[in-house]
Length: 205
Image 1 (spheres, rainbow, N blue to C red):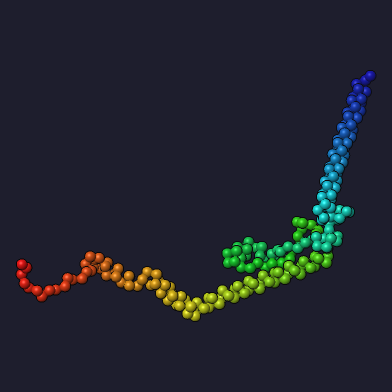
Image 2: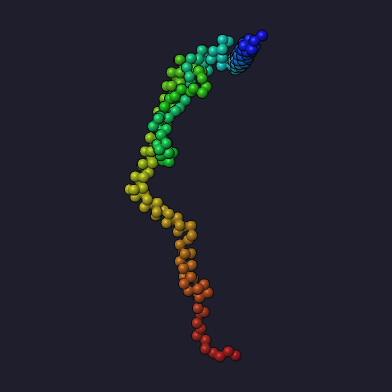
């Protein structure tokens, strides 16, 4: 057999080996993919069975409305903040001065579909009412603070200072302050009463 024939057989064997390796790699990938699909299917089936036991999924694996038990097609709602409040500077100012947030209704993506259309609308209305009540409470609180400031500026501060002064006098005793001032000036033992004078000049016996 000539050398060229040997080289041809080597090439053929190399191609066969290459195709065999490719087929084996494809088989491994297919087997791995099928294994992942089976694991994923088992995980989904387990989650569905647990959801049915917990009463959040129906027998078809569909999410149920947590209010009425119908099929849940909508997300729940949570309180979010406007894009303006999420700006770093505005957020810091709101925290520093205890300013109210600009609340809004947002989808609760984290917990998935858990409300039917009817109760989704009811949840939005209820949360809007809560936000309106909170804004009203903030407004009343700000108004009461403003009223206190105005009362201070219109003589309330003077009255508080007078009351503070009277309270200090009562707590330490005003007379006691006067006596301690005299003792500090003349000395504690120099503040005394002179002995009574006598008119009897007879010599003692």
